[in-house]
Structure formats: C-alpha cells, structure tokens
Image (cartoon, protein in one colour):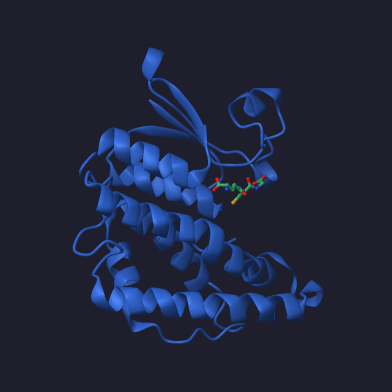
Length: 213
Ligand SMILES: N[C@@H](CCC(=O)N[C@@H](CS)C(=O)NCC(=O)O)C(=O)O
C-alpha cells in the first residue's frame, strides 16, 4: 500500500494526499514534520535525506519507489496510476502540465510563502510588514496571470482536470485562506470559478476544505 509521510498542514503534503485520493488509491499517511518531528530520525533520512515532507514509499520489488519532492510525487502517482488521465500521454499536453507545475513550485510558491508565514504562522506583534508587503506585491500579479489563463481554460490544460491542477489548486487554497481581516484579496473571477470547481471534487475532500495552520 502507498505510504505517505507528512503532516497535512503542509501544502506539499496536501498535494500528494489530494492526488492519491483523486486516483482512488488506498494509502496510509504517517504524521511527520513540524510538531510531529520524525524527519530528523535516521529512518526518515533514509527516505528523504533533506528531512522535509512529503515523502512516499510505493510499489514492490523492482517497481518499488521511495520519493520526495511533492510535484515529482504527483507526477509519479499520475503516471503510474492514471496514464492518459491525470498524466497526459501526448507530449504537448504533458509538458504544458509540467511547466505549470514548475511555475507553481519556483515562482508562485516562492512569491506567496513569506506572506502566508507572516499572516498565518507569525504572531501579530512579531510580523514584518515589509516582508508581507513584498510577498503580496510579488504574488498578486501571478494570480492575475493565472486569472487570464483560466479565462480561456476551464482547467489548467483546457477541458479536463489533470495533474497540473493539483499544485496550483493547493497554492490557491493557501492564498485564498489568508485571514480576510488581515488581507483583502483582489477579485480574480476566473481563478475563483476554477477553485470553486476544484473544491467540489471528492478527491479534494480533507484538503481544499482545511483551515490553514
Ligand atoms: N520542494 C519540496 C519542499 C518540501 C518542504 O519544504 N516541506 C516543508 C513543509 S511544506 C517541510 O518539510 N518543513 C519542515 C517540517 O515540516 O518539519 C517539496 O515540494 O516537497
């Protein structure tokens, strides 16, 4: 059975859990990271030498994998369990998905993480207003870009839900979950429509409905 390591309060773990649920896989999730520790143990470092979550163990014998890096895990699960579905078979579609996934990891996440940490994980009296302002200034144009893309596409790749929607949906969940008393989000109607659709998927239950912590 698929084994997922990581606390659900991590955006990167949420991607993997959502993907596994989307694929209808049975899995066992073990709490690790943050207050749960575990990641510094020798056993865990054998699986992920970075001492970060998520990580997975899957398959048997020659097909067994131990993987880390959330987007790689989403790609792997999609390729293994839904080729031609979540994982597009045709190269143009596949690499369209790949580039949006890389954009999430290298651009959108990098821009938004400091703002999330300030508003959700930092007590009000310890916040750095400049860090927050910089994160908001970097993130809002990226969501505006996403909004223009989703004006022409129902999902990230057009008509159908694919692996690319998972990391980006998790990123939208995190930004949309910022406390409205602290941050007024601009209106991005196409992102909101897409995110609303993602939230109705049974695979996203327990992921896109979570309160941030
Ligand atoms: N690029 C990695 C980043 C992994 C990462 O930074 N994970 C964070 C949680 S989101 C972590 O493990 N933090 C330490 C901890 O939870 O103990 C991925 O996408 O999997």
